[in-house]
Length: 371
Image (tube, rainbow, N blue to C red; front, side, top):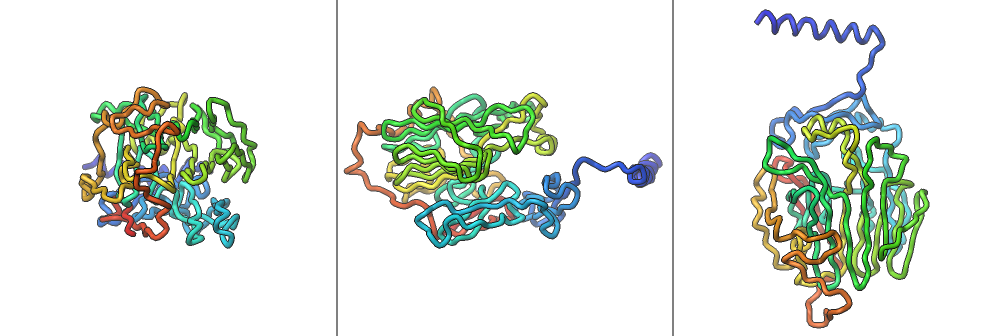
């Protein structure tokens, strides 16, 4: 008891000495202190870079936000869809509750957090399905899994990660994706990075095996036939679209030292595990679509996940595993490309889900979306 009392007395004294000496901590911290948010209660996060010493915790989203909107350089986003002329190219400031950035819902012309919409694949992969239900699929590090498989669209993801000795699974992130459609192959990947700098682009891009060069300036665009790639910001943030098939937002992000410390990722100085945060919109999937994410877009899909769980986890790793990143050979694959015909297959058109409303789930344990 005496030792505890001594520590309690010494800590304030040391803090006073540090302040008096002009010392300043590298980063401030915030935590949720509202018990009803069980998923976030007592979780500690470092303050964002834009307000390193002055933030608070938004318990609902379980993310630290700048106090009073004091971010010196707030993130912005634009609508890049010319089908919405009243909103096209209009700049919006991202809400404080979107530390990972935002995108503009061109239909409503409002900014929304990138990882809180149907079709999101972010973090230690957290998915939001086409049915609006949030779930995790951890896969396995250094392996490939099919996210979407349809008759003329197949998307595989390569997982990187680290083994957690205290758990029965790997910590994993999506490092790259391969997209097969018609007779084409499109590759998006995050380059291995030791020290992260926002100003340095870490994308690797290729189309049909040929590297893609994209100027490092906001709005820079690359096009080939019905394929386009647009930079939302000068580095590490792009929008990929194949006309009539899909639109993908992709952002390269690192695992920060704070993230690693808080979640015990064990990240070392030689690799910050740069990975992709992704958002998918599909315009014409068939009712046979499958894959970890794709199956959730079936009109008759009924999840077997325990959505009341703190972390609803989808199993079936072997069912979705592929031999290589570009191989459409998972056991649930349907891809035939231009060699097949979709004439007799019912289509699920325009899967942008404009009327879907997303809110935090029970005790903020996930994002629940309703049509």
